[in-house]
Image (cartoon, rainbow, N blue to C red; front, side, top):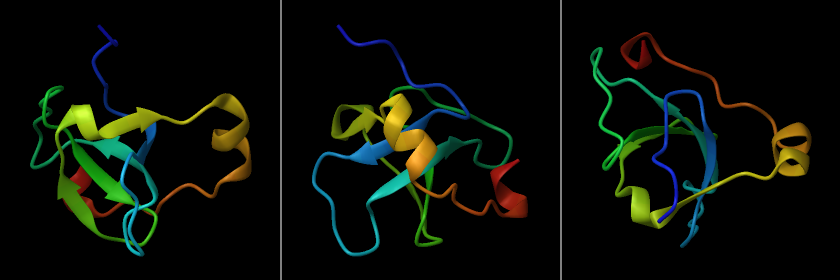
Length: 75
């Protein structure tokens, strides 16, 4: 069983699309659900996803990929 995702974890989608590639786990209206976390994607979109559809970025990916910009709702 993989560890639960936490706020601040950098992740990527298993099934990537144009808007959903890599992002960061954020709070949504002050709350966090490890099984269905909110992700602020690099494209700017924020979505709630099943943790089963996300993979943590490797250290190398985290260093080389730009960090998504957060919004006030992500805090």
